[in-house]
Image (cartoon, rainbow, N blue to C red):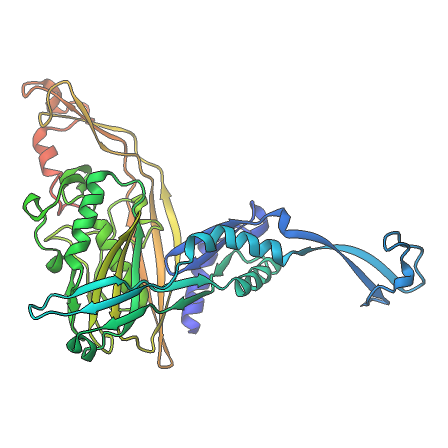
Amino acid sequence: MVRVKRLLFITSMFLWAVPFGAHAASLTFRYQHHLFSVPVDTGWQEPREVWTYQGRPVTVPAEFRVDGDRVPALPAGFERAEEISWNRGAVRAALERKIATVFDRPAGSVTIRGSGTGAITFEGVGMLGRRVDLDRAVTLTLSALAQDVMDITLPVIETQPQIIVEDALLAAQGIREVVSIGESDFSGSAKARRHNISVGLQKFNGTLVPQGAELSFNAILGPVNAATGYLKELVIMGDKTLPDYGGGLCQVGTTFYRGVWEYGFPILARRNHSFAVHYYSPQGTDATIYPPHTDIRFLNDSPGALLIQTHVDGDHAYFIYYGTRDQRQSEIIGPFTWGFAAPPPDRVEYTTEIPAGTTRKVGERVPGLKAMWWRLIRSNGTEDEEGVFSAYEARPRFDQIGVEATSPLLLNPSGSSVSSASAASAREPTLSPGGR
């Protein structure tokens, strides 16, 4: 534990060196990968009278007031001062408005059934209920304000859903409660991307992971093409972002990963995207996939089997892991970010891959950065820490311009253009960490 504290202290000193009072005050509340920024409002403050006698606090004597307002001359030894204090009610209202209204959710209910064919079906959704413990959150907030602390762990109360398991074999394997939930937000996704996310999630619905088994994301996902139900959508291919079947499946992979990472399962394979993608904020919690090259794998070291239910609710994707919880308690801390880099100069490529005279955008300007998260796992009196590092490239605005095969622009005289052959080689997914 001492080593963990020292590690976090050094990292925080390096990354959060700006004093609390040196900028517009804003508090960060965190729970798992969820981060909420709440500005400190002057409406949280209120004036308060402080009375002392010979330096010690006292209750104001009634005779010192006239009509409860004007204060006459005070006897020797008495002093009256005014100080600013924090209003618990105002702080509570702000936390409820800024956090609880978007974070809280009721517990669900689900009936799980097996079949003679081995298929597993769900009636309902076993969503884990959660709500912000506002009383504790206010107390922590006031304590943080008093100590000029900017970062607060959000106190959350979880409620298990009602779960009915009608299959004796599943019950015998320990399917009895929600172990963990992975979730992500794909707001703003195009229609084809949403379609691919839905198709990809369905591949995992009803997957049973035996106790002690390793699960490969790609093994369950299977082939990704038109025949397996996917549409073409943007995919990271080397230094370009181009349409390909299954664009958006990294949303499924990230959701899958977050559930097992946040609970504390051993992660055997995970790679971040080559550049920061807003769908996977906060950075450092993403996981890219590109079958068969890039996979996500974890080990089920829980006391029983794990059963996966996938679900979409509006713009949110979920992996619900049913099983049996053990004594482990996992906490993730981050992101610690540094190494920010501005996007490189805009880039143009001349190519024969699109009609001559046409233009297509194959890359947006994206700044680069590095991100680190720490996962602390406490179990049976021991504590283990694990750093999860992600490096994201800075990317330029990248446009392709179509030319004829005989165009001298393909000779790349200035270095700002490349040939159609090199453009094709840059699309090989093994060249850099890309993803769908």
